[in-house]
Image 1 (cartoon, rainbow, N blue to C red):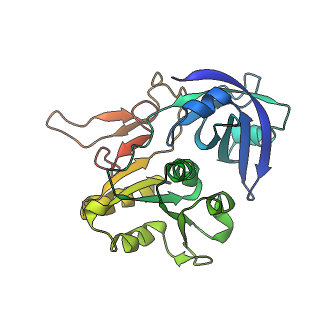
Image 2 (cartoon, helix red, strand yellow; image 1 turned 90 degrees about the horizontal axis):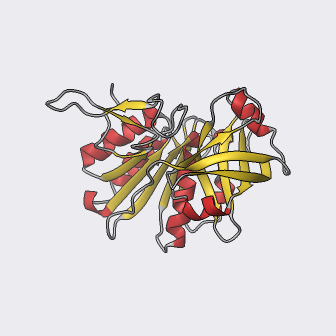
Image 3 (tube, rainbow, N blue to C red; image 1 turned 45 degrees about the vertical axis):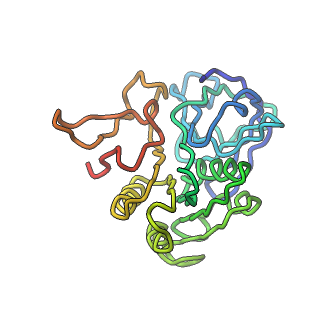
Length: 266
């Protein structure tokens, strides 16, 4: 059940030129949050910026009551958040949205992340590892300097494969090309794909999963205002039916969707 939380900042570390890893103390949120869900953060006590900012949950430490977020500085709100220091307190609404579903029985979890899409993927890998599953993680970025969360993923019992578009580290090319290559080792009933990243990447993940008849879920990260389905600002099209096109809200119906639900070509 989403609720407002008053969260003391525990740490705020710069992990790349533009990306920060923020940890807050939020015991109830740490207990209730599930991979794929997000929080809406009021980044400043004043009236500007007016709207909260949505962030996928990156990590939880349920015993210590800690919640981690991963974000890039891209505007006024995230610039203010980058300045948060221990001793500050943030107003956080969450957990929000629909979480990833467990993999169908005995299927190999294959987690695909592009750029900051690694945030919910890391949390999912953390939870699956705690449950005794052994996920494979495909992490992609434009170059080696843009790869995030390598240190945290390295602490988990996952099989990690890297892809960079310029070939500066790991597989040379988009992470979706790596996904298509890896999937050749699996029967379509033997794997479950989970993905988060830019829309173009998710469009390609959807195409690959559909063509290979692979079970898959994608997590959309998009601009939104209220985060609870009131403003209707995060509508995305679904496939048309006999009744015509339809739409779903990323904040309320997602952010996690089955690969067959959305029409990302529109």
